[in-house]
Image 1 (tube, rainbow, N blue to C red):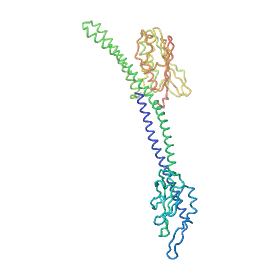
Image 2: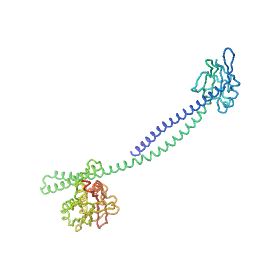
Image 3: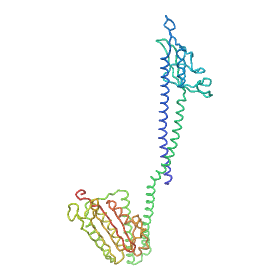
Image 4: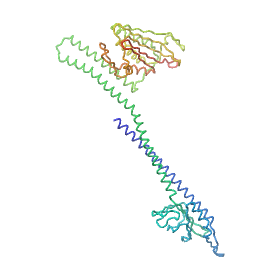
Length: 456
């Protein structure tokens, strides 16, 4: 699927670029060709003006005031000049009879005045004397001028120029443009293939994550649902069982339902987090009070497992701005999400710490080089630890360390740390985990503490 999409993107890139290049090349070709034609026409008109000014006009009679052109005197000096410029001259009488020409044979082209220039095709037997004999037709660009004195037409002057002065550079331009377009299209095709691959990579990764997420979520949801269904079927299959047995099965169903509800809540939270549907509601949040509340809630679990749970608040850091003692650990944040964050972290520490261990929570203010205060929370336990190879994946969704290591402890869905990382990211903070196998784990959460007077 991705290769097909990538191929289509590359083809579209190449096709659009090829069309644009063709349009550009066509414009360049037409502009250059029209410029060449204008230059030839300007040259022909200039020659016409020069020759007309050099014509020697004699009076035909003293009484009738008629004039005639002295052909020998007029064109004797012009013949060598026009040869250098590949220009041919023809002089016609007022009736259209050819009187003088630089061509070896007449062109047999009808004479008519035309100063704008026209292109004519001359067939075999009428080639220019300065061009090699050829059986293919010769194409000329011509300008014709009517020469007159007053109302008397003295004759017609026609100036011709070889058309290959236009076609030769035009053909060379077509070759150059074709070669350039071909190289550009090939280059764009290669670059388009590369860029489409880079553009598709995030989509591929997102698709793989979504596929893995869907698979894992389906597995996690299927397990409690199947167990609930099994317990209900067992209860319905034996209606004569004692009330105590039914009570035990109902407790199992209740526990599985709660687990399923927590899983659905976690999935819903992550889905909303990814889509950005629900934005965190930031307000002044005293982190010390929040941690005391979480510790109080988790104290019962710690007592049942024989784990010592403590909270230490370090207040030795000096304040960088005036504030009350109650605001020392206050930041801008979402109370509910921060409570969920530290409940997950402390709950994990209690879950993977054996009986007789301890879990210490430390809150302190730290000031970095930027002089911006931050609040740092460390959750340190003496639990079973995390293998070093598992640490890079610990925040991946549904990732769980080898279940054999956590034998005897309840395993979660693998979403707790992913949710924790998402909450920390929402608060523009940082979370780091350090762990030593069979010695314990340290989870460090650093949250920025914005100035209360500017963020309130």
